[in-house]
Length: 313
Image 1 (spheres, rainbow, N blue to C red):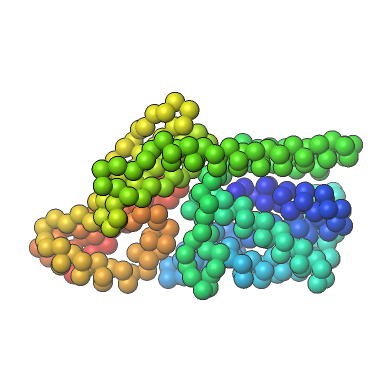
Image 2 (cartoon, rainbow, N blue to C red; image 1 turned 120 degrees about the vertical axis):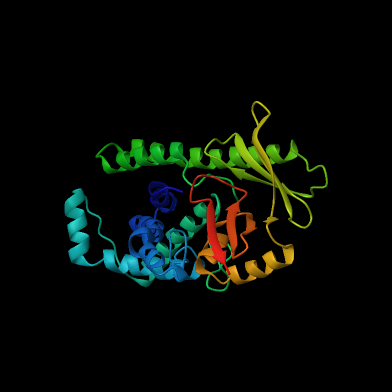
């Protein structure tokens, strides 16, 4: 979900509850995405620490508490708070107390919930597990939601009658919930209208930027075969259909390829690829000297590099 929405949702909820600490909640809501500035470079420089990335370590229940608390502490310092207030020409004073730390964490929890609703998900239970959790309702960034959120923020910034600000916040929340409801409904429609056939037993639907177009992935019981396609629930059309195998071996034996794969699984870049992939598959080619293993994801959403090639002697 976008930066503006992450600020607005806790702010609006706290406004409705007549809390005096709306800003603390809003700042807690955006604190986790500061990983793009302060955390992501660690994973870039030290590939082994790939969890230090955007939507990585900070997007868990435990580290969200740490991140939101640290951010609130920093932004509550008089010198920093005064500079920001002067820059924006608005009083953005916040307090650092036990109460406001809890409110900032509430904002962080709304952030986790919003990102949980989007593609690929987040490692909510890290450091106990690296598994990502996702409802797969929203796409990474919903452009319409982001634009409306920005407009609402501008209305809150401007010195206009409070009734207009209240109306803007109410409209935004109604829109956000409605879009989520429509997407959840359309996801179920996409699944219902595409039952599994031909030996396939599992089916899942993933959002795209169009709320009426879903990527369907079906697989057999052993996850050795995947069938994927895009499906539009309005015109009932399929496109980009493809059938792939989880492992394709050329130039050598399957047993030898599997032994090479076991070695490759120790590579940091392979672990990182698997962590980011939905359905990782492998094309294994032996050239009489070494195995060339090309990892790719059945889901190619354009959000990241969809293939990785490594060699194993």
